[in-house]
Length: 439
Ligand SMILES: [Zn+2]
Image (cartoon, rainbow, N blue to C red):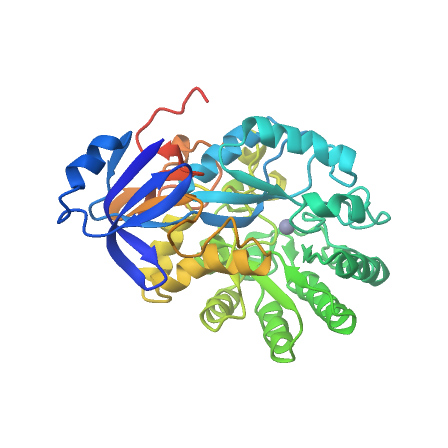
């Protein structure tokens, strides 16, 4: 299969350059001055497909290290098929699946259930996490990390914080021995007090129970100190508080091997944007305006390394129960790039170059994904690509999502920047306008 991506702005090591790309046998070949070349007609005649990329930007596919695909176990919320279709539509070519599924991947036998479905159904690349604990509950004994290690991105009990220092210490010692990263959802359950939105102005004025910021940063602080003492590579999930940003900034200053991510909603929204709807409920919650400002400063100065969606789909009825009764979690894969491009790049908070690093280069570097994956487009690289339209304005309509989950606070937002075509290993896995309704 030969595909010619004609006349796009290609994201090369030198920045964006107008070029033609030939994709053949799953690899990229850059081609120069095709218009001027007398061989142009011959080449065009020899390819199977030509994609006109005028005024489009061709980038390596995005990498999301924090996605809940819900399968095996919760297929009514999402499946590996629908979740990876959603990723393809969002411009993602590699996503990493969190282990709060059933069976939880705490053993190789359990992980194989998921790996088989990935093999069968995934339309983009999926790298699973293994759990830290045997039940993925932040409390039970350690999982069989050694047998899982060759098959997983890293270890996480995402959804649950590791409740005791001793358990986290044991996990870090084992992860270090295996050369893996510990990826932590930081949440001290003794500080939750049955809260479900941020313990701030909105919670107080609307009579809701709040989740305090210290439930997050107390564990970040504990873990950073452990990682520093043990020399373990440590990554914090979905950082949401100003205090967490400051702890991580200081730790990086001391040379601790810590990285972190935040998600689009924490950068764009705060508790002032809350409404009495389940689509505004996620964990950690939308924090205060000062937290949001600290997170933006964190991405600007490099304290926050990467952006992940924390795509966490639920059934429609589940999310219809309002702020108190709905489960935590919103979908993100199909609107992350437009939301980020519109709110951060168009408003000159960060450059497009920086946004692309947060979505592509940083996760590749941190999780050693280089080799099959590139952060810039180079000759010979695996053709995992997204073709972006940065200009067309549109309204986010969750009813059109390919994910089974439709719950997002960005429903109805006017945005621009979206993938019109996504390619994995040279194969087109998503084209704007194609009908995927029966998938
Ligand atoms: Zn989490």
